[in-house]
Image (tube, rainbow, N blue to C red; front, top):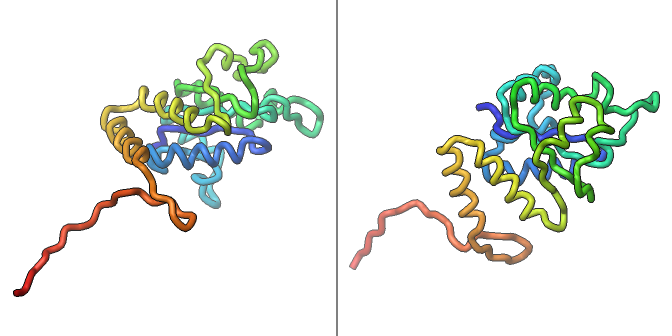
Length: 196
């Protein structure tokens, strides 16, 4: 099965957010529906080819826009975004070429996308795209918005299954001994024999 959501990020300051985002989206859509390089690239695989293959399937690309994504420089002091070999740049280029939907996700206090005129292609397109926030203090709300966006572009069966998962996740929890448990659970039916 091809991933429906691809998370692109700069490792220097986006890895923690990308990991948490993949975990939460995986709970709703299933882990196989969310591509995160650190979890989905297998040892010995040609990672560029695997990323290209995942993006050719036209998933939603969640581009985590962090301060380091924008300001990181290479060993020569040049902006990494401008380098043809920058992995995040390649992911965005491949996604756009494939016709994937791109959602810029603003993180770490960024309240609006950077000025498009200050960004090299293909990043200069993000000013034209509807963006979302991903904030620690409003995580659940921001995740719900991203889930809504993903559901709006999916097929009906996937949408129904994800909505059922969301409904189950919204059920109350019991907290005891540091563990969270749901208030109800399913038990297989067993025969009961009463002897008199």
